[in-house]
Amino acid sequence: MSGLEIRELECFLALSEELHFGRAAERLYVSQSRVSQLLRALEGRIGARLLERTSRRVRLTPLGERFLAELQPAYAALRGAVEGARDAARGVEGVLRVGFQGAVGERLMAAIAAFRDRHPGCELETVEVPLADPFGAVRSGEVDAAVVCLPVAEPDLVLGPVFSRQPQRLAVGGGHRLAGRAVVGAEELADGPLISPAGPAPRYWRHAMAPATTPGGRPVPPGPRVHTLQEGLTAVAAGRGAMLMCAPTAEYHGRSAVTFLPVEGVPESALGLVWRRADATARVREFGRAVHEVCAARA
Image 1 (tube, rainbow, N blue to C red):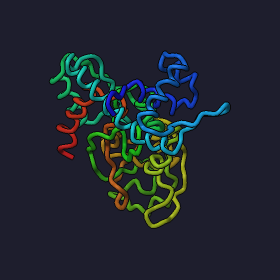
Image 2: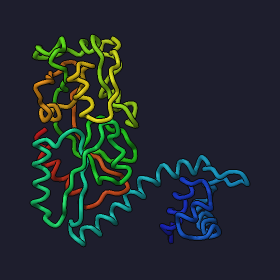
Image 3: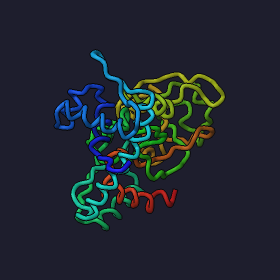
């Protein structure tokens, strides 16, 4: 593999996403003939075709699909190493935008304070992430990292420190039949509508926030679908259903019109810090270290 050029790999990655030589050339700011030249050079090193090109379509060969699956994480790691070295040379400076769902709890505030003390040259901003779209702001670049409720199973995102593992809470209105209880059993979720997140959140994540069945297999009646936490709490206060949420959010949003009850028999809630796999910077890594030391170490 002597003389392997990173440009050849970048060309292959662009082609695998665009499946069009013209668009790949535009992305790379080169000519279409240069794209073809780079691809031929890479295929020559490997000794087999990676893409099939006809007058109508471009597609990956089976070997090309396998090569892409192995190359993507390696290329992301390489970019991350370069970015990390560059950031380290400049110091942890600039702006770090951190998203959160619901509320910035005490532990997270302590991690933010620790990060600011260590890196006074970096300005940390907090941005609320919609309940209905936990990963969208990270992917779009609106935030550099986000604290979200688990589970997280997104191949393009890194799940960093996990913390605040506690029993889930069920938010119910003052007139709800369970309002006077000290604890709720998982099977009792089948006795009333459960409010759930709407929008583009992945199906597995929405089902974790509002399961369709109890652990025993009883169906859980669906309630209103909401886009924000405040919409959900308003629906709870109005008696339109109950809502599962993590303990820190429940503690932060305590109010007289809503009661938060621990739920037994369902998986614990947990929070995790996520960021884009391809864009980890020294700022993100240092904030992740602060979260791990302050929050995860006490989880």
